[in-house]
Image (cartoon, rainbow, N blue to C red):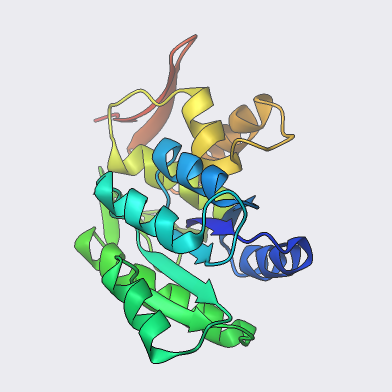
Length: 224
């Protein structure tokens, strides 16, 4: 699951991002409101965490502009302001939830799960292509030959392929969606993870294959 975390206090940003990553989230971090809005427009996130007090553009303004632009991504507002009127403003501006600082990591994780659950329920909890099933809640990839619990990036890549079977997905699209704009990873990391998934599909006796079209991208195809 891919999150955007907008927080100008860099020590807090680093600490929270580490917690989220340890709980199988991929996280992009930005430190001002303008970047937050730009990232939301450029990338499809599963959820966004917005601090209210940020330079260049405050979180409430980012939230309002995002909703005006038709961005429906679940958004959690973080704020040191705990007054009822502040919470009402955030929720009425389009936030899905509002959490005051300081907060416990367990509560933040629970709020994120709750916030994204509704959106997830609108999509299939399990994806099916050929004789392969991907459980989006447990990250289990299964077929007649058994099952594997996928690592986070393996899951995200397989999810993209299974949500768009037969469609070509470019290396650049994988990099942008999974590793993020600011990643230092080389593009060949995509091929490495494709290789991991291919081996797992073969071991599971799956009747689907990840095919490559050089210069264009990868697609998931049923072989029968």
